[in-house]
Image (cartoon, rainbow, N blue to C red; front, top):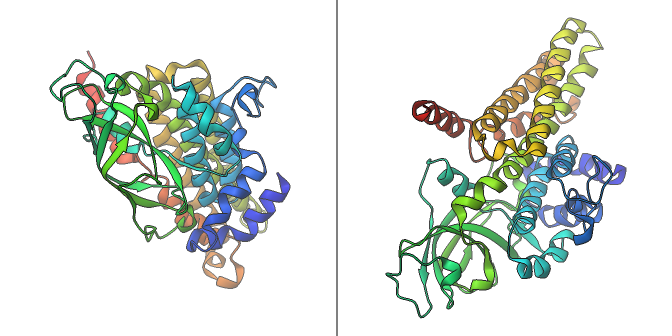
Length: 376
């Protein structure tokens, strides 16, 4: 991975502030096997680096994303988008879809986008689903008891997803949770940018992470065949995949916090040693949060104990804030000198993204408050 780290170190600022190198991120990560982390060896993955087995394990992906985030949060954001979509296929009952798409996703020749931020907020009661699905088959639109998978003629999708990353302009596939207009249960489907009616916006003008191919997608009368179903029962499937979705997001925070703490320690050693205890305390807290995260993902407890994971996400966002602040304090005025920049300004901008990535810290706090009100 040293070659990847070197490339990211050289290009991190450019990836943060420009989309000129956006098309190079996915191939660079794929060339070093990043997307195979935690994917079963039997499916072409690297298996589980944690215990050395060939089984799949989302913890390996979390740690791999954290490793990349130490060098570039833009690259880690792309990594998360691609690997999250891969995780959806790994946990989908649709083996045919998995077999068709997985090889291209693993080698980086096809971009995969999560598209499920809206779905995760829907699952916690934060907002309604943004994509509507109209049955296009022989069954009546009033057949409320049928699921989308039973609509043998497929369906038509309409709606908008306002913020998705890893949308390669050439081609991408994305996941979305859809609300059938006939009252059938919500489902999770895949749509292809090559399909008629899929409209990708220009890249969003972000203050950071601009090399991540982040844009909006409008779906207008997009035909979706039954073969594109990831899960026909979104409300049962989403809680099972949410720990990996959020866990890999947490990997971004862990890596960024580690990077700022490393730079803070280096700067403090040159004259502000009084910060050493504070830096060590945040390192200890970060290690504890990381251990709790990995343990909860491995045990499966976050499937039924989502609030515990929400609190970890919130806690990690705060540790990122503390780490970047310590880096600033350790460097003092030197942090504001252009000639002495070693990535601090970029890490400061990157840190502003951690609390707002969907679901945001504010949304998670609202979900926790709602859970507390409804708890017996």
